[in-house]
Picture 1 (cartoon, rainbow over the protein chains, first blue to last red):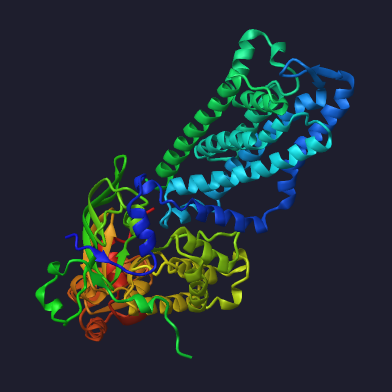
Picture 2: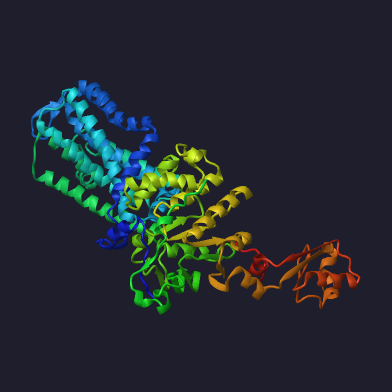
Length: 281
Length: 339
């Protein structure tokens, strides 16, 4: 019964490429098509929304760092030396910016594409597998996160808040932070069905932003709360960038990086499995 | 102007292993028609509900094959299983020698899909929709650019190439969706209710385009609940109800087997309709009493009508018409509303 028909035509190359995949029907090594689509779609993007994501942490840096910093004065940095309050909170705000950019792209954008534009249904009716879609969308979120991080680092430089050349490493580190949030965010979004549920995301993000040792050291909390904060992802991002900004690396640095590597892997797995169960029932 | 038909250059089919073919085909005549879709006892269950309940059919290359059935009959589910986007519960399915459950991307590389609801990319312009979709198949831009222009021509959308998708009318969007489904020169085109919601002009244009594809040898798999569409487009069809196949054959054969050649429609007014049945007894082969009219199934409609008049019955209106697929469909799937 299985008379194998060689259909010919241009799709044969795609078909041949799909034949020796390692991830079976999940992946066809073509995430770049999803990326190309995303870049093309940015032509019709609302640039104001894009820019607001960049300016938000900059405004925080100016009001808190410059304004509040005038009363706070100098504080103790990660290496024990004193640094200005603005230099203390700037890396933390960069971590927040990476988180926000990644979360916005991987939650609201994905939510819309999944439930209203039916974009993924269309994609999965082609040679693309769910892993191609997940990788492509997450890459776009990272690209955006990287643009924000680069811009913010430049602003820090202009404000004289960069004291070590190591600070440039904050850009790739921000991308790692964004990767963790984007992959997990997309996986979580796949469970959400209504706008009310989407609001829960903000309900989690805002307190995380305010309390993850962003504006003051972790030591102000009683110990149980310290443990809780340390379990949250943003704290690791804040601490990681704060260490990098002054070029101090300890065992904790590896823990922070490890945290994001695990978060990313878990997020990718969740997203791929969810996309498969949603669209390849 | 001679019309350039996309994909015409690749319509030659090759078969890997010639030993599978009957000996006659190797000597040249008649052209072989390999089976491109073979479903055996195909079943899909959602919990206890069987959306598709053990259907078997096979489709040779180049055929236009229809799945007819009321809403919820399992047509779309069957289509999704063919595309490998819904995993079957049991049974076997063979698409050009491959199992879509394990080789989804490979199978879909040779499928074109026109879903029930348009899912065009509203963030992209008309021509970009075609290019980007082609990229999803991993096709190179050097192939896609001329192909996109060719398909825009085919879909009569050339002057809309740079328009935004949401500026298109319903018929245009549908044509663009069909054009998009052809970007990879599919051997099999899956069309899920392709003309639902379109005005008659748009439907006829679409039928014309689909007929051209069929002429090029593209296998069409079509679900519809428009009987005229099925009669226009399908070489062969199955009538599906509650996940099972109720009948199978060409439109003409189904009409022959499940209905009479002609139908007489009589209206006596709603009060008399119910009581008239006994008075019409014996005329034609079968009688069906509906709230608003009475149908007499007969091979010779005029003769049946003469008998009605001869018995002194005076219908308010009478109509003799050819039996249609709709008569077959209603007979097989019932007249009650299914939701």
